[in-house]
Length: 128
Image 1 (tube, rainbow, N blue to C red):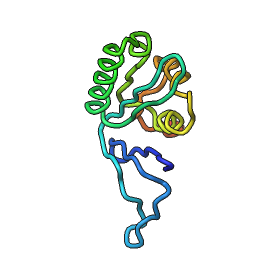
Image 2: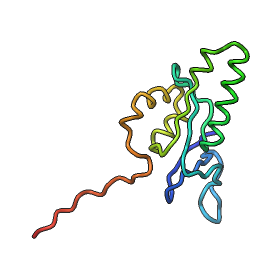
Image 3: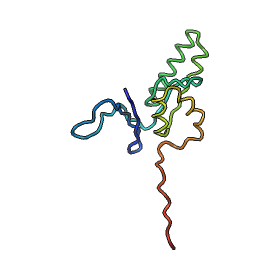
Image 4: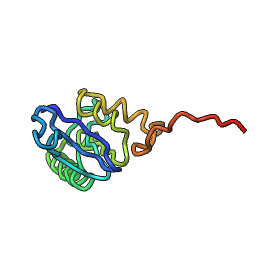
């Protein structure tokens, strides 16, 4: 599957780009629509485990950590990080498309722009 997020009307839409577009509408079938996106990954390697709606991803991470700790893998459990919020679409797509990219994005998280702010149009100069 070749997944890709798009931002439309303030919501994140996840599409499978390998499926053909509808003949009637010209759009692909949406796999997920959510206002915020979450990523669960290993902080040390950047390996992405899950992505999607924050509620589901946080629940998955809590369960995975609990199972790992019960199995004695405390270090691995503590390495799982969940990042959620309005993330930039290009960063999301790199995280799901490039293995290990999540750790690079995580290091720059504080400096990333708000994901739902549109690019500001070029400032028009007005003669007064």
